[in-house]
Every structure is written in structure tokens, then in C-alpha cells.
Image: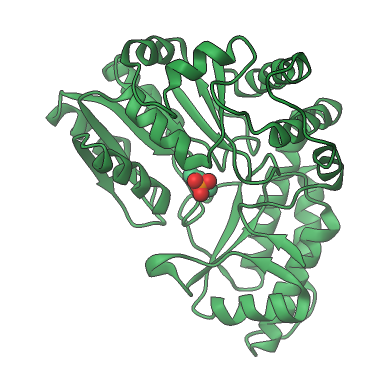
Amino acid sequence: MLLFTPGPTPIPEFMRMAMSEPTIHHRTLEFESLFAKVRAGLKEILKMREVLMLASSGSGAMEACVTSLCTKKLLSVNSGKFGERFGKIAKAFNIPLIEIKNEWDTPVSLESILQVLKDNPDIDAFCMQVCESAGGLRHPYEEITKAIKAYNPNIMIIIDGITAMGVEPLEVSYVDALIGGSQKAFMLPPGMSIIGISQAAIAKIEERNIGFYFNLKTELKNQVKNTTAWTAPTTIIIGLYTFLEKLQEKGIDRLYQQTRARALATNAAMEGIGLRIYPKTPALAMTTIFNESSEDLRRILKNDFGVNVAGGQDHLKGKIFRINHMGFIALNEISWVINAIELSLERLEVRKFDGRANQIFLQKYYEMM
Ligand SMILES: *Cc1c(COP(=O)(O)O)cnc(C)c1O
């Protein structure tokens, strides 16, 4: 079965092999030396002042950032499940919240954000996704974070880049916390989150000193010394080390270029056989198709062609399907997925198969490579 869901993503063999070695103890020089290399590698990719790794899924890092960086009122962008999650975190901790809600295919507008900031001078933290995975939507976070800092540089900016980190180069000049997760473009097992933090965020974290397990001050104090506050997810960190090594060898720009070409060529191929891209501004992490027969399509893809793509949630359940582009993906695999989708449309008596999708995909892909 080809796993083509936008998280978890398949773990390449070289990483599975590395992670099958005997467990190492986390309070050893061996682990500290490995952790130091992983920290350095991540800092280079994220281009942020510091980096923290937590033994939690991405939501744990979202929670830690909200509690550590917001003291008065949070402004959150909700264009889907993950934007909604920031709001739920604020509510769980009784943090006053203003939410800007849009349909899941619609990027947030800068004007709406600036208006809320003017009406609520007590907002001291802002959070949003780069890619809202619920609908495969790309928000214009660059111009938004820049405008917020220009309006009030004291507002802490928390960016969920879980489906953007390792997908495209990220502009972090106006970001205080950039969140990532192991099971997306890093192609690791679920269970570890990553936070890139700015100098201003470090100051805030130290002043706040909040929480216990998710106390970022405690983590920071330990991680700058190449150790962790609690038992580290050693196996995932070993896997991450091999990923970073591979990236060094391949070049991260090459990974970004391939991901971009794959995503844009897939979108073109899908449109070329009459399918509709759901988001108004699609992210590169995944191709999201709006189709009323999504459940039938996914069933045929799985049963007849051995391809697993993701469906939709809540009001988009049964109405969209999502194809992953994150990570190192073999061209023959995505090419097969595209073929299988075209074949499935024939089985649904929507369109006769003529190989058009793959023709467009390969042509567009090589134009961009
Ligand atoms: C996957 C994902 C998360 C994290 O979810 P977890 O289940 O906690 O790992 C957060 N934000 C986005 C945009 C995601 O795609």
C-alpha cells in the first residue's frame, strides 16, 4: 500500500534501519553529541535563534507556545481543524481569545487582522498556520507577520509550520515561534514536535516560566546544554539525524524544488482531467481535491490500486481528498498515484482513461526541474 496521506508520511528504509538499532540511554555523552548535531542541523534549516524538541505530537508544541507566549489575549486564525485547535487550547487555559474564522478554502485577509488588533489593544499574541492542512490551504503568513510586527513589535507571533517545515523555505524574520512535527515532511514516526524560537520569545519564555511538562524555560535550560528535561524520544532523534544527514548530501534546496514541482504538476494534472482544486490558495504540502464522490474514489484507490490518500473532516467529510507531497517521494510513486486516480474516474464512469493526467504531470514536472 502506498501511503500518500499528508501526515503521517512513509518512513524511508534508511531511516527505519537507523531507528532499529538498540536503544541508547538519553543521559549519556553519546546521546548528547547526537542531540547537539541534530540541534545544529535544525537551527540551520529553520534559521531561528534556538530550537527545542519535545516528546509530543505537534499539538503539544502548540499548547506550550500558547501558554508560554500569551499572557493577555490571543488572536487566532481559524480556517480549519488546526486553526480551530489554537482556539481550543486558549479556551482550555482560560486565555481570552479572538478568532477570525473563514471557510476552509479561504486564506485570512490582512485587513481583518489589522482591524481586530486596532479594536483589541490588549492582544499580546497571534497564531496561525502556514498551511492549514484541513483544506490544504496556504495562508499569506509572510505579509501578515510582517504587518503585525510593524503595527506592534511586542505581539508574540506563533506560527504552526507543521505542514510547511521541510516543504518550502520559510520566512521567519517576524516569527517568534515556528512549530514543526516529526510525522510530516521529516518522515519520522509520530511523537516528536519541534519549536524554532526567536530571541524575543526566549526572553518571554524565561519571564513566564509556566507549566510543568511543557515548561519551555525548563526545556530551554536543558536543551542549550544538549540534553532534555525529561526522557528524550531518542529513537526519533536518531531518525532525524539520518534525515538531516541525507538532506546535507542532497541539498535542502533540491528537496524544496522537487516538492514544489511535484505539487504544482499534480495540481495541473488533476485539473487536466476535470477535477477541482479545493483551496483558493493551495499549499505545496498536499493536493486537495473537492469532489462529491471522494469516498468512492478513495475506496477504489485503496482496494484496486493500493493507494491510501486522506479524506476530509467535519463538513468536508466525503467531499475532499488530499494527496501528500511532503518528504522524499519517488517520482514513480506519485506518478502511479496520479494514474490510479485517472483509472478510478473511469471506474466511476466519470471520464474515459487516456493517460492524460500522467502526461500533464510528467511534462509539467520536468519543466520545473
Ligand atoms: C498534523 C498537524 C498538526 C499536529 O497535529 P498532531 O496530531 O498533534 O501531530 C498541527 N497543525 C497542522 C497544520 C498539522 O497538519
